[in-house]
Image 1 (cartoon, helix red, strand yellow):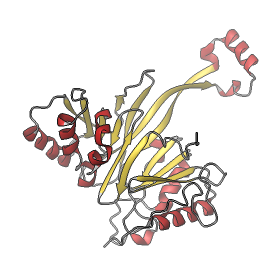
Image 2: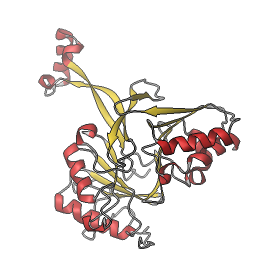
Image 3: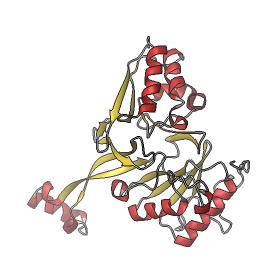
Image 4: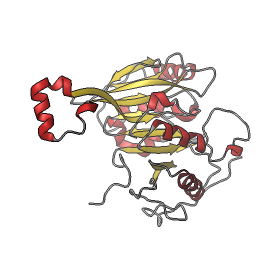
Length: 323
């Protein structure tokens, strides 16, 4: 069996191009992050696996797929009875428009549809058999008029306290016997997945040591933000955040249509080599994930041209210039 080129390869499906559509489905937890158009067409009957939707904000390219998602869940050939929860930033007027539209046009659903407004710092229980995993929200910076949110999936874990970390197993067992487990082991929270939606660079303190950070990267060069909107992130800013937060894997998404896949590979590869990055990088281009590993030789290591050795024969050079 071939080793997965990046963590969560078998768990994630998605699509993202700036302005057009963004959504990301995490199969392990049955979660959908954002709901851009085309998600139901792409996922087909997999939409019945979605239990919770988490919207980062209310712009059309992140919520336009909600209407068809609800319709397919109601009429399609799948489980039509399981509850669907849609979580969204408190007071987001654009999400409320879709909510009201669905209330008028889908008044007789076969399943329970629950709308859950969220604020920064809230937690949401996830369907996890061990009961140790939950989702926590944090504030992002995108629209000045509406609240936007990022989401961390957090797992409750335990580890040796620093003073016992260097001991062998026999010594650890003896320490637990002598002092009790609570004196030897400490609980901690591990962020195992982060989704930031569209935003300026995410706050490092909210995502520190995330194992898998999904960060928008609309622009690869600062001069490409010719309209100076200051609503999106630039590659160097994103890499600064990933380094400061000590993340393990970085997924770049929401890339501008101005870039071809080869341009993304080249520019991101140059930036990684220049920095000597200590984390793996993956980018979502349309509906495909492309790994560009860290420079320590882990899967998908960059060759001198910046092309991933894992899929160099599977290139998609199609691209259009953004107006």
